[in-house]
Length: 126
Image (cartoon, rainbow, N blue to C red; front, side, top):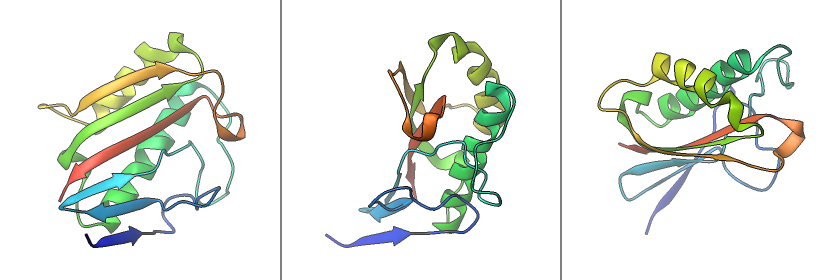
């Protein structure tokens, strides 16, 4: 099986030994995206809404680099430090994805890298 690594400066660099995304068998698999602004390298101040927008912008940049878009997402996984942010994240999510919405799982987790409060990974069809 052929695998191709995806990298764009329009999304934050990996904070560990992994790729921003991998293309394999007609799909793009992204690593979890934290709300890191690629221009500053930091997590934006403010509320969960601001950081959710940053996460989806990062996913969109990786998808674009791979030759696809958020419209071709088939599965997302949302990790939240606080499940009470679920409804706010849903409202932001609807600004980036449309029907038919991708399949999705959402979890509250004990902690996320760099103290983030949201991380999202996605699978796209190419």
